[in-house]
Length: 469
Ligand SMILES: Cc1ncc(COP(=O)(O)O)c(C=O)c1O
Image 1 (cartoon, rainbow, N blue to C red):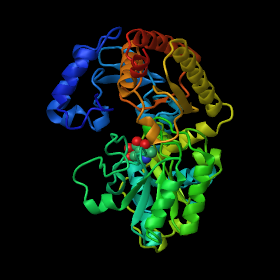
Image 2: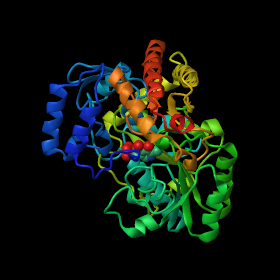
Image 3: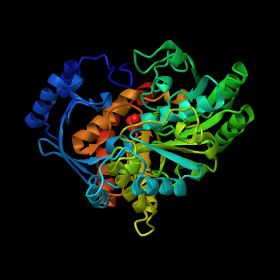
């Protein structure tokens, strides 16, 4: 069985030719897209600036507007990838773009003191996120996580961090392990990259999501040594594992009892599921919160917020934890964040009402379709995020996701791209709905899904159906 994703060691040429064999039925990705990709491959490793962008056809894009992407050959796709969730309002949102244009008339980057844009951004974040007394701006989620973990270690003077199998927190060494692990490596040592020092990996301990006992065991094995527990409150990097309230509350109680810092990594969930992130929904308030992605609707901005007592450990307040970043708080990022958060706050726009309603429409439709074709599936997600796992039984943690039919999942998404709905063609990857999506988009995608899933069921492409035949 091909495991979940293209291994980064698979040569680009092999990936492309294999993908070519799989592509296109309705959509025809041809010369223009392919030749730009070839030019890129000659000078950029694998032709992409982030490994997960290597998806085969369509290889290159010309424009992005609203919910629609257009590739270099003129094919149009309804975008459910949304730049891995960085797009919340739709591509090229005029409110965001004009706010940026206005801001840069006066200020680009000063790199000294502060600006009104930085203070306004911090005010909006503090107003939205329950755990935020103080906030810093960074350029990426990885930097926000780096700052959070270093701050937790600096504040507690302890070495270990606990993370969960399946959660992803960016590229920082201390946390770059055990995301989509194969069954033999899950909960064991599974670095995301070579080149990370053993010490960095060994000081990150792995627990199972929704399983408080697995965290209690780690606290028992490392008394007074755990600086922080970090989690995606909804692990969206493996689709959507929905958290049990008792689990989140249990983490809050355990970390408080042991003097550790509880970090919610809300880089995906923040601003997307509620203004205040998932913590607003569940009522469990962490010590630190990282956020990013969608807060700038596609422009680079992220940050870290938290209790003043911990945040005061940064050097500008006389603490010992370094705070640095040339581009932090630049005008483009700040203007993008202010404009995006202002739209989210606007009751007339009703962002949350819109994406939750369309998300339910999509999930209900997919449930009807999979039931109708007799396909064993768990259709899940929250608000704007939807996914279809192809497995029997319930999904609580990573353990359950090992039963997912990865081949069928990736095939479903790949064939949806061929029909014009861009869903990331790798197992466990989630789909996003933005403010720019419409009922008509959802209904068209559901019609396509009905055709694709019906054909797959008839062709016996679901392993569970083959087993029961
Ligand atoms: C939950 C989470 N945290 C952190 C990151 C890292 O963010 P960035 O890619 O902006 O560095 C990601 C990226 O996907 C993420 O999903």
